[in-house]
Length: 150
Image: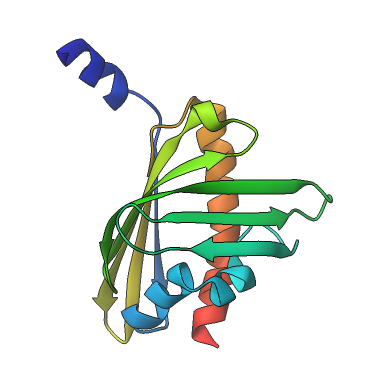
C-alpha cells in the first residue's frame, strides 16, 4: 500500500490563488448556483450550454460548454466535501476521458474587503493535462473575477 500512496502523490497538480472583490458568500454562490456557473465557466468566451449542481456530499454536478473554436466539452463529478461559503471538493472527469478522473478543492476565505480563492486541482494523468487545465482554470477565474465584482 505505501508504494501505491507514493505513486498517487507523484501525479501532477496545480494550485491557483485569486483575490476576488466579493464576499465569500458571493464567491461560493458562483460555484454552486447553475444560473451563475453558466456566466463564468469555461476557458474563453465560448458559451456554457448546461450546468447542474446538486451541492451536497455525494451530489453530482455537470457542465457543458463550448470553446471559441466551436468544440463542445462536458465535465462532471461528485461532491466529496461541502462547507458552505468556505470549501468545495469534488471529482473531475471529462466525458471523453472518464478514466482520467482528477480531484478539485476550492477554498474560500475572507480577505480584507473580499475573498481569497484557492483552487487546488490534483491527480492529473500527466503534466500536459495539468498544463491545459492551468490555462483553462486561469480563463475561468478571470471570468469569475469579473462576475463577482459586478
